[in-house]
Amino acid sequence: MDSKLALYIVKRVLLAVFTVFLVITITFFVMRAIPGGPFLAEKSPSAEVMAALEAKYGLDKPLWEQYITYLSDLIHGDFGPSIKNRGRNVIDLIMEGFTISAKNGLWAAGIAIAIGLTLGAIAAVFHNKWIDKLIMVLTSALVAMPSFVIATILLLLFCIVWPVLPANGNTEGGLILPIVSLALYPMSYITRLTRSSMLDVMGQDYIRTARAKGVSNTKVIFKHALKNAVTPVITYVGPMIAFILTGSLVVEKVFAVPGLGDYFFSSITNRDYPMVMGTTIFLATLMVIMTLISDILYKVFDPRVDLG
Image 1: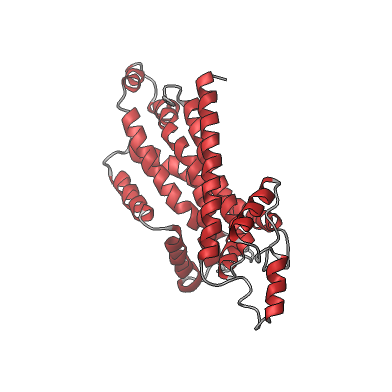
Image 2: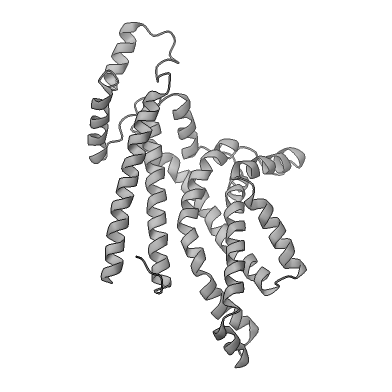
């Protein structure tokens, strides 16, 4: 491995660890600062019952001691028990929900990449033609809308106006709309990114040289132009996958998908501190790791990039 690349990876890993540490610290103290508590929803607990519950979960200790204890447990891979899920371990609940969220997210990512690259290439090849303008109008509209707005529109259209698909993501065929909702925004962004990059590449000297040598237009587009134009897309794929998985929290709520989003929102509502902390740390770590992988792949695909 190149020494400069190795040094870059080490620096980014250290930065990633520090970033996750900041997320843990901020989330921990912000959650404790919010008025209310995890046991206030109980039916008028007595002072003795409240004290016993707080002692069971360590909430009777000073805040700094709770923080140190949490960090110590976290280092050993212990996210603690969920307060509102009958004491089940937080990491088990996260993995249970993430299995569903990841499946939906990977399907959405695959659709977004495949269709986005295709539409971007078509728009570039037919630059300033009607099909290019149509693709740009549609993708501009979709990029301007958050995933939960797209989810709500799809829910209205295909579950109420034309009831052809189920609104509940926990039924047969119920994952179609959540997956489409997650795929449309990144698909549109990749389309625009690919189009812009291809237009730049197609103006390069080596493309003109290939055409002057009689290379077919199809070969020029797919072997030369698209291959080199895809490099900027690589930098977006990592954060995109993390965005899809984190964006799915809201989309899952709209379509009642029993994924990680269900646990996340219920934990916030119930002040389930360990569950809120666990999901936040998990998603933040996922975002950092995917961004790191994307940056490294960018360097691998384009050695000219200066890592600094």
